[in-house]
Amino acid sequence: MIRDNYLDISKLTTNQDIMKLFALVARHGGVLRFVGGAVRDALKGIKGYDLNLATDLSPEEIAEACADEGIETIPLGIKQGTIGVVIGDTTAEVSSLCKYVKQEDGSVTMEFTDNWEEDASRRDLTINAVYADEKGNVFDYYNGIEDLEKGYVRFIGSASQKIKEDYIRILRYFRFYSLFGTEEPNKKALEACAENCVGLKKVPMERIRDELFKIIQTQNAARTYRLMQENGILSYILPDAGHIDDLEYFNQLIAGHDFVDQNIIKLFILYRPDRALAENMATRLKFSKKERQLFVSLAEKTITLDDILDEKKQLKSVYLFNKELCSASLLVLTAQTRQAPDNLWKIYEHINSLKEPEFPLKGKDIFDYGISDSAKVGKILQELEQIWIDSAFDQTKEQLLVQIDNIKAVV
Image (spheres, rainbow, N blue to C red):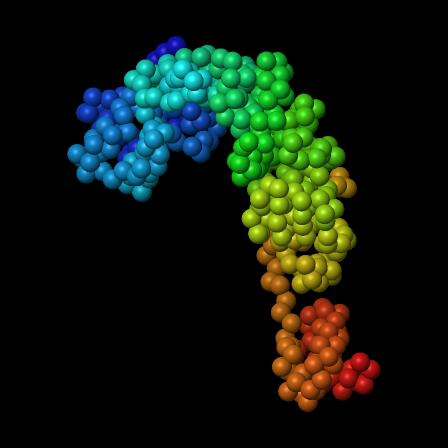
């Protein structure tokens, strides 16, 4: 259960301000430990993002201890046992140990405890219930280290009960399986996820979207998405994805490369939606305005690989569609055709570095030239814009204006 000096603490954090918090808690009679994702990721040797801490002091005791030493705290969720401790330029999330208690009416309430194993028991997966102190001693109450080493992802206790406590744990299970699972999925866990997936209808769509995006970012997203689909996990949320193999190809292609809008691009690769489905998915998953615009535009715009790869057509495509859509289309079309140019990433970066041309004329310029009919102004402006595009955006404002007399005779 306890592994002495097991973890190099520098893999968790090198922030000395955070480390001072351990001494502060100890001075006030408590114990502080790292917990959850940060410990799990450090044990696996990968960079973690969530640095969470747990203590056997209550939120009020932590707040009082910090106040005594002139340290600011933020009430992130006092009722849930979490406060933010402002140390230097960092806000550390510190949660008090908790346990779930079943009431006579069958409801479950959360109570604070000073028992570390009770706190571990309320967590979802064994690999997320591992703690470490500031000396690198690791506390593993449910064999999470061995599960992590074996690539085995399982719930603590009854999988069904854990899921019913919070149905988002279904998607969390698949996310962590995608990240760390090398063995076949835990049979009981998979059955419990499938049996309870209707419960996802009770979860706010924003939480579901965020978990789906986290899954889709993993290298094994295609394998995981296929597993979810085979077990009907997403059937209450989204239609079946018809292009999982495209995502598998794409993930192999992009390994080691970072790019913007990857969640939207990968989801589009999975589904290849038409405009109607793209609109529906964007609404259902509550995309931001920017995400929605890109997702729907990918469905409705008719950009070809030739439009993007041909240097003579690139700038025109950027002008007509914008460079964000062009660079996203390059990746989507590459996944769909399974034909990646050798210099794919140079092309991608080049498109994003282009300055979008700016048409030098406005309606006022045509009015000033002596054309007062607004309908004619619009048509002349349209003709001149096409001439400007065909000139590879080379003609100046003056060169375009001298062509008005020829154009107005035919519009």
